[in-house]
Image 1 (spheres, rainbow, N blue to C red):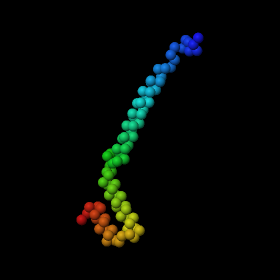
Image 2: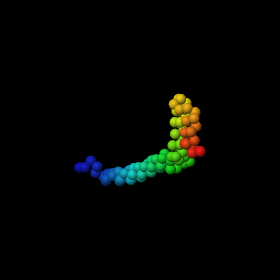
Image 3: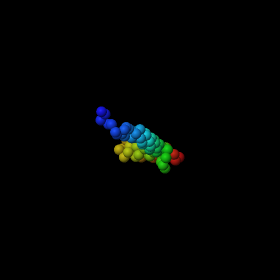
Image 4: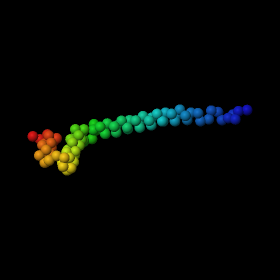
Amino acid sequence: MFPCAGFGYGLWWIFPLIMIVMMVLCFFMMRGRMGSMICRSGMCGTSSHDEEAEDSAFETLKKRYARGEINKEEYEEKKRVITGHN
């Protein structure tokens, strides 16, 4: 009569189990991504956003001086401003 007669419901129970496992995996994957996003923005580790901005400004200043866009006096003055020394 029925092609599945005698086998009962088979493996129907595995689909909800797979669904639960996938939800748990997605939760941990998203949790890991959020952690890496926080670290990238400078909230963990040793570097801070201010230090990165200062390094970036100083690198830009060095490049401008190397290209000859500013002279030595301007370079020294801007360097003092960036580093905060009077």
